[in-house]
Length: 483
Image 1 (cartoon, rainbow, N blue to C red):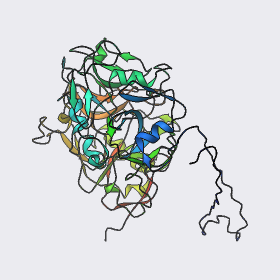
Image 2: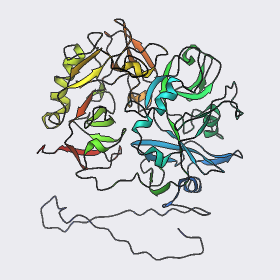
Image 3: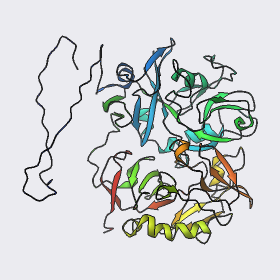
């Protein structure tokens, strides 16, 4: 970077691999490269600078607003995208004193009941527990080295409000991971509108702010605030967009903050991953898996030690149209309508022989019941203390995700999605949980056709051959010899 009075000369080189000659004609190929030069008045931090400085000084496509305590990023689509730990985030604000940077996930990570009925306290709520659960079942437990990247003792303002004004610090909760409150959301579209602001992701998701002792504010798919109606009850299930505070010393080392080239953080910008075991990678990272149009998957977790659980990035399609199927029976097994499809036709026509050899033969699928206002742990365990696994389980090669499991929410706007089934009953022998197009969790008859997002475990000896795990450059994998 330089100021307007300076002049520098640069010698630029480009090269291609010596083996690149697909025509086999001995060469004589021509290549071109495009060079982009960006100009902006004032100091500009590109790389190797603290996030808190770069994210504000490099802002384009939006603006900033300083409320005296935090500097907020505003606008319709500013270049505030950050890739960290397998997920795309948006930078929301920088704390003026501590120089920490608040992020929120660009897409819903899951769909979770906020809390029990008529209980809007964030502290010790179901969603606060899910966000800060350090086990394999929680969000924090699947983040990359969180103690090195995020402020673990962050303070979250969960004060009850009926306005969008800046809340007093009446109800402050200390936790590593939280949610955005209503005020922070409204600051993001200052000067524009909620429907066009950059935090409107076209899905339904929880905020941190109680509207009353019974209802929580959530953001609808149109970007508007809801807190009064029945869908805002604390026992409902809406999308969950985790929020974290990056430490002041975290640096940007690459990227320009756009959606196609998000900022990359020092310590989370891995290169040359060829030969790396997939079971060392992180929840949310993308994988090329399967054949045809349904070949993009994401890492869910390493629920079974040594294995890598993955899920289709979106519901299955046939020639661009979402494939819909009913469950066949209340409890999933390889003998139900859904189970027969996933463990038969799906493996043959959607996965293919090459990738099928990478899939673990026997995975245990848990089907505990989660009612309205139920704790997410009940989908897998007999109680919230995780004292023992639910006895409602089956074994199969291919299955579906549980309700509230990582990556079980929608990832694209509802106009390009369909509702999809989970494994989790809502009421025994009656209704099963599914995720609606807008990202809200609901339930219905197992006989109704809905979308399918297959889940499976990859073997311990699956390795990466190329890619960096982003959506534009997913991991390419192969099965390494077990010997």
